[in-house]
Length: 168
Image (cartoon, rainbow, N blue to C red; front, side, top):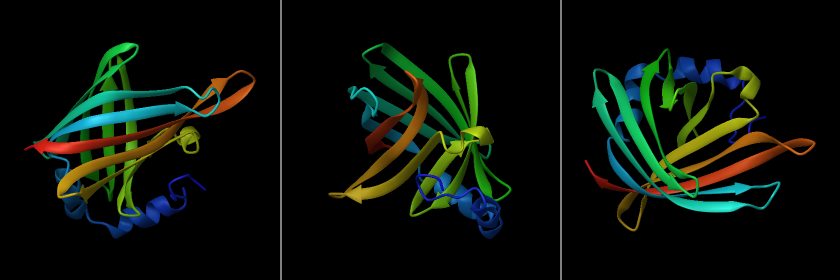
């Protein structure tokens, strides 16, 4: 079982149930500028870091384009993304530096759950995003984890983000 409640065997069933047009509505909800903070925590070392993040999304040629910028202790970083609804699920390519990763997404438990298209990483990485209203403001909340090698074994890096919608 995956952490956010997505089972590998559920993916085909979910994909068949949701038409691409309905999925596009979910992607278009991201359009605009979002500003806030993320916190990263290592379960193995106890290390915690909070840092500012800004994300901008826009719809162009049937794709949701995104740019994310963060300022961490190690310096500033940025990433670009393109997401589409295809064959009943979301597909997103994220480029950070020279690295490009591809993710699948499904609607689950009131949010959008992303996981690597590398099926060997299904239990190593997962992220859930949900847009909610808090005190009259739209907020993009993110929770997720990644796995890394630490000492003699594996450890989890847990992250949480909360970004407020500031402009279209």
